[in-house]
Length: 187
Ligand code: HEM
Image 1: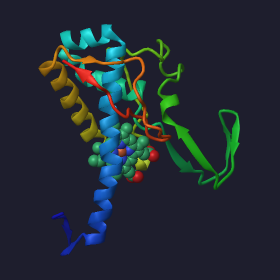
Image 2: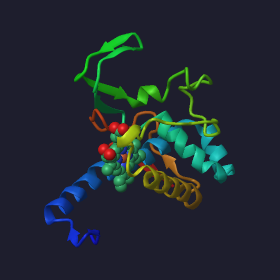
Image 3: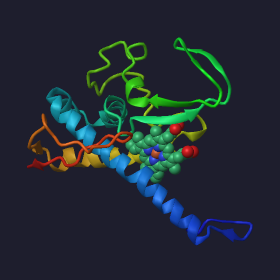
């Protein structure tokens, strides 16, 4: 709100647009990372026990949650030039391309060791969940820190937390974003 360049500040319209963007891009995505990560942990009790025993694994665990069940499943691009062969497909200039981030995160060529398995000790996790290139997510580091603080604190403060139904939670009926409608728990 205070940002200023050569005496010029953001107008009310620009401020409003940024606030709307931050709620859309920055809130639900991170909420879903925390929810999807907690669900994945409770569906894999060995990983939950490991993280409780070794809280120092939390940073790598967050990368693995991002990879395993990405809260953003896709992003889009427009081809700026003819691409003759991308995985056997020709993409003409001007064509829209949907990039399936969730699928790429499970690519066995990148993760040869059981890509569909949650492994918080997995080495070299490089999730594409924040996109790439010049549009790489502006809030990636903030989201990582928020998820790390939220999940580490929950495990520490509520060690007996149990999900009411880890097998059949209700998902939001969304397409690009992926997250739970609710995740009832008790302790
Ligand atoms: C787990 C949480 C988040 C995920 C998975 C996520 C994911 C993404 C993805 C996939 C993109 C598009 C990147 C591309 O097309 O290459 C993006 C863009 C963006 N994100 Fe995030 N995001 C998250 C959290 C946040 C937060 C916390 C903020 C801000 C506080 C934020 C702000 C933005 C903005 C401003 C862009 C547009 C960047 C541009 O077009 O140059 N995101 N995000």
